[in-house]
Length: 113
Length: 112
Image 1: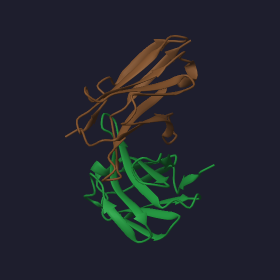
Image 2 (image 1 turned 135 degrees about the vertical axis):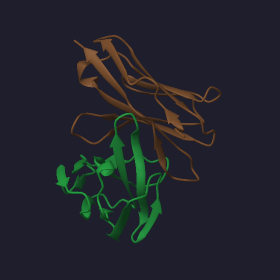
Image 3 (image 1 turned 120 degrees about the vertical axis):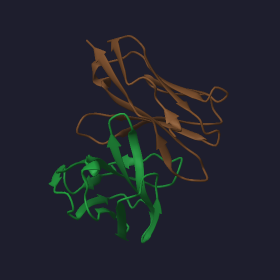
Image 4 (image 1 turned 90 degrees about the horizontal axis):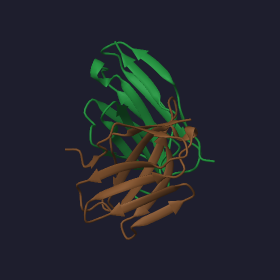
């Protein structure tokens, strides 16, 4: 079974803090993704990576950066957290882009106060 | 601009009846469509998919229908069970971008 794990289920940070969200997958997948889920907006893609050290912006990259130093690990970084980044963050991985199903982690509920 | 839309935020059906969840899209370049199910406090899990070369795909109680001319797809669950109560997301992708675009989600409640 594919397993995608995220470092924290719940996180509370203060405005202006630097925040790291970590994601690890154990299926040797090439592609990894970061989404945020907000009520009424569904899942929106922040960044994705199709190979180690490679990254592409998604639909809402502003205020975020990512790092992929190893194939199994994909980190989302909030350089200076703001209250409008309070959200559920979901990491996913897939073998191929586009047509292949993505496997999701359980999510991190981030609250920025 | 929302390229994938699920216009019904919620749906309630009786156990044993059919659940029909709808999804509309605007981008004619989409060539693959997927449905995901999400329980509270869990990540979404893949349910069923369909390629644009087909108009129907069935997997047990779940059937997805694609109407390309109307840019519309639907997920049918027959018979519905209380364990199907969850949020359902449709998603679409095009081969040239590799990205999935998700709808807003529909919360399905199946009443015993």
